[in-house]
Image (tube, rainbow, N blue to C red):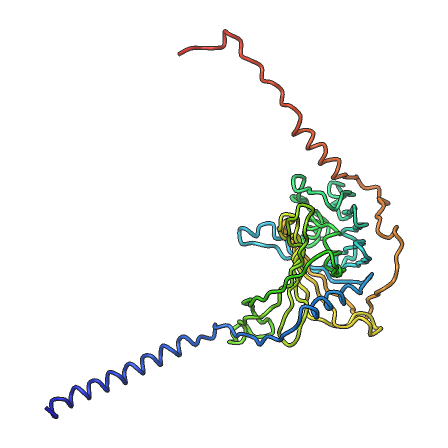
Length: 363
């Protein structure tokens, strides 16, 4: 019996050894370099986050020269997007919602567009043209209006300066100055809203690591602070969502602004922080801002050319935010166009003329 058991014991040992080798190999395969790293989360309080928002809101006005980079996402549903070269820009913003923006094409240093918003209405002068006058327009409208039915793109024209100039002009067709006021002038918190705190873990790529590095894929922890308003009907709805990066401290990394239907109007990403002005009073503020407008199908990246030369805290007159048509451009009043379109759609259609009896045939 002892001799007969030996082969069984030997076979069992070999089987266990083989299984352990096999399982060890499986474990190595599962430890793939693509497995995201869970980054360490730092803790912060709701009060700390409210204070950080209000620290951003200390900026009452700002004037700066910036690099502007447009991304046209009109065909994002098909997996395509056009990325344009950076343009030069000058921006002046002032609370509560005033802005002046000038966009120039690099190298040739000519204006593509100028635009202003006084917080209620906007004006956009499209200045770059092929000489025909077809593209040059002076556009006026109301910030709160929906012009999606009037939306047109400037295509099929040859523009002096090449495809990059044309791309910038195309982007200007949908660009509105008020899209950037909330990004650059973060509104403070108040007692009219309630603020709800939650957490989320977001899969991301660490762009500081090499593409093939096992450290590139990470899971980054965030605090989400939702700003909630309650309407006269007693129904609550979200107005803003603040994303706070929890790695290495706390940093306001993203701001989403919602419309009355809880759809995202603006998705704003704040880049790494640095010092603005040379005064030492405005430190740890974002040096780069990316504004995405899903409804208008575009994004724009704004980056300070010289952060130390930024002017903060000055007061600018109202006329600085009211663009005049000094170029004599053809004017396009979007409110009037929208009213005309509504009148056409509401007018009764003409009644069809009945066929004469002789034209009616029975089979």
